[in-house]
Length: 345
Image 1 (cartoon, rainbow, N blue to C red):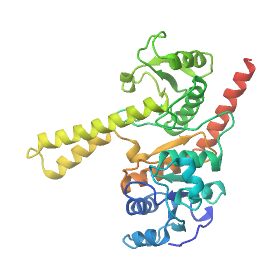
Image 2 (cartoon, rainbow, N blue to C red):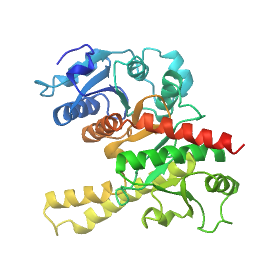
Image 3 (cartoon, rainbow, N blue to C red):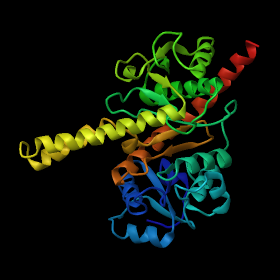
């Protein structure tokens, strides 16, 4: 293990990890980095307070693992204003990790810290893809529907219809490249399947979707996350984030209820495993993180409450995004969408 960043020749994928981000950092972020370095073809660049990070590394067996420690100063807290915090803390772990990606010294970025700050930092430092005003969070969030992509999951609470169209295009690239879905079907989340139902945003977006080259199947309802009617479901970040957190809470509540109901009827180890599986089917982001679509680099935002295995899962998601050249695919799709819009006048 070294304490300086090295070239890509040492590892197929170099992942810069914001070691200070998350509810359990740096203990669990370091643990996740060790798990990832041991089980995945990655080199992990742990960005954070050197003393804190190295103290956690000393608790782990890092023999032969591709892990580097990149020093930084301070962290961005969840309750700080994202843009202001980025300016006040230019040497924070998140900013330093994002710069590594910008400078070509990392291939991907993972943070379990502030979603707003990670998105703002990626937008300001890396820049957004051509033809896109704002990036968005996307990916599967339900274990019961692991091949259904949702955009946006919380990064944009107010969206014009044109933004939703760009989000849909990027969601299709993710569904195709990451999940292997051919010609993904796109649905707009609404209050009913009928074309006449929905708020103004949905109705106006629906007209744009119908006029695009997307495989638009119309409006979908909440139940359609489980029916397979659409491969990519589009909504604004306000709705998407509420959905994600509702299912997460439902999973945790169900797991607790079943654990109590089955106590004494199953061996303790089987009971805990069963309860964990019930929880997990309602919360994929805590296992794999969510890719940030629309920035010039592979960025994955992990769940703030993730433990080591969740951090490792987010690193694996970032690795796959790089291997599948997801960013270039989205760049090409957005360029085609823009060209199509211009040609229609």
